Picture 1: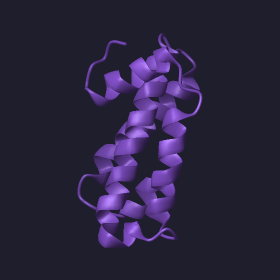
Picture 2 (picture 1 turned 90 degrees about the vertical axis):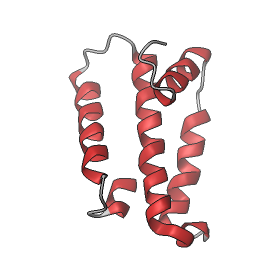
Picture 3 (picture 1 turned 30 degrees about the horizontal axis):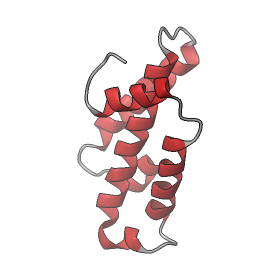
Length: 100
């Protein structure tokens, strides 16, 4: 995934910790607001993908580059199955607002 492409890049551990926390919350099954959690997961995936694109520099422009593939997949994942509640969760996570 995107984190694998970042290797030991500065800041990757922070993203990895956020990813582990998100996965643990999902697996724990005790989710008060699934729409907010999905929004947070999508926003986190976007940040990880953006990191992979930045790390790849110009190479990410090439359609065969792994970061380019991840970017396209992230865009599709962001809009697939979107409802007003999920959109609220995404925008809340992107804007740093914890409330949907």
